[in-house]
Amino acid sequence: MKPITIYTTPFCGFCVAAKRLLKKKNAEFNEIDVSRDKEKRQEMMQKSGQHTVPQIWIGEIHVGGCDELHELERAGKLDPLLAA
Image 1 (cartoon, one colour):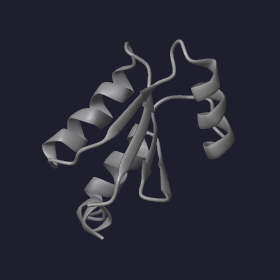
Image 2: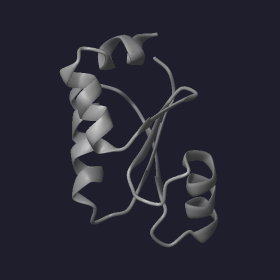
Image 3: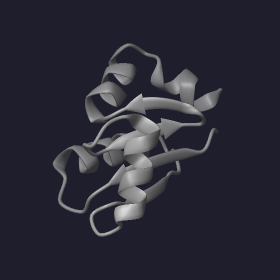
Image 4: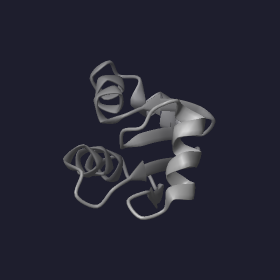
């Protein structure tokens, strides 16, 4: 499996939903809490061009946020992306 990185904050419902889907897929991920880490938040914004959480990468591919992750799942594209 490719390494997965997800930038989150503790009380974000979308973050919880994204992590729930990844856990359901038995996908291990590196979670980076940006709620109190301005450097990591800046890193996330620079890499993604976005300021909202979650921001998810599977390998070098920026998936986007929770909606995009679930859309990949609905389209049957998440499993191949995780396995590639």
